[in-house]
Image (tube, rainbow, N blue to C red; front, side):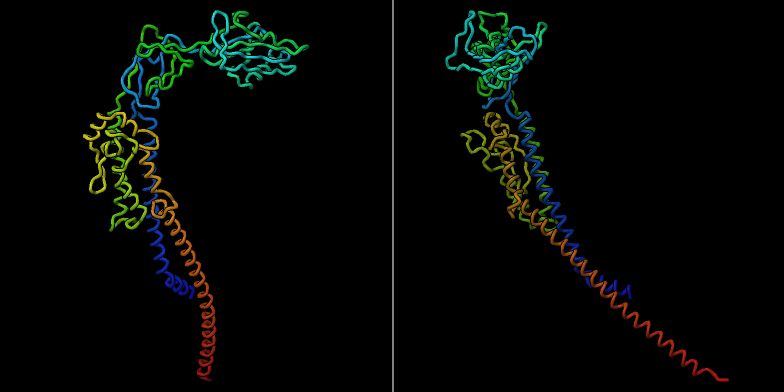
Length: 452
């Protein structure tokens, strides 16, 4: 009877359980396929962004003598070559106070006033456009406290304490550039003198000036130029300089690279990656065997890929500059796969290298932006017509199927328990009937037995 109850309960729900199991397996395959497609397009966009950001696709400046300066790409796209000769590097004024006993020596109270300008022949020619800064020194301030007060004033001069062989020194360091030289005036609070030891003028204590303020002096293509800083951005279109050494009378050369080979390799890699995505997509949307044959998100991705080459990637491009990925040689075949038109790419690189460089940036327009836009468009979870929407819908279906399967399992267990209980009572009644029949049979046998 127990075995019969088990068999009946199983048979009652077998068809529905099998159907839900098959549906769950299908949904699991669909979730895996959608997640794979979403991951591929997202990773492709991310990889392109990383390659554009850190790769060698843009026109980059290169310097022959790297000891003289480091060079980097500016805002614009540069071209051609230049000569660079550096005769002076920009320097910050470094000033030392006289020796003080210890950093905790009390320096009195009052104020220190910093005046800025250029120093020539022991005299400060004050820059009237650069307002003087007065730093208040509280009563009982030590040398360390004075340094903290100057730094807290953010006056363009930093202060720190160094212990020299002859005692503690308050060090002052300004900003680079000849125009950022400075003097120090002290005003003492009566009865709390001591700040006068920190006052400084070039004529009064020239030995305390350890490094004079200086501007960078260099020649670019023979034209002498100056800079308050050793870093000069966009000194010519597309060229940033950071001067690091001197090379008087021995100019070095700066040239902009030709990225044609790197761009061709990049476009070949991009075409191959897109074809891997298309192959996966075509398998998934096959009308006979594909798990996503009727999935709206997969169809949206297919439409997006079919339009990728022809979409406007650079809306602000002028006549003759590349505007689409097709201008960089990306072509779409009839079956949705891609090929690289190397002839068209070479022609674009020849006619508009700066336009190609503009497309290969991390800006809001260009190759990366186009792929990133497609990736975001087909993965947004709130749109039911995208891969993200499909994933959300399929996960909801999976949860519903799991709930239904749990419900059927519970109903099957309930029916099994009911049948076992019912059959147990029947079994008991059958057992009782068998006992009665056995008793009657024994009585009949006794009646029919031969008598002596």
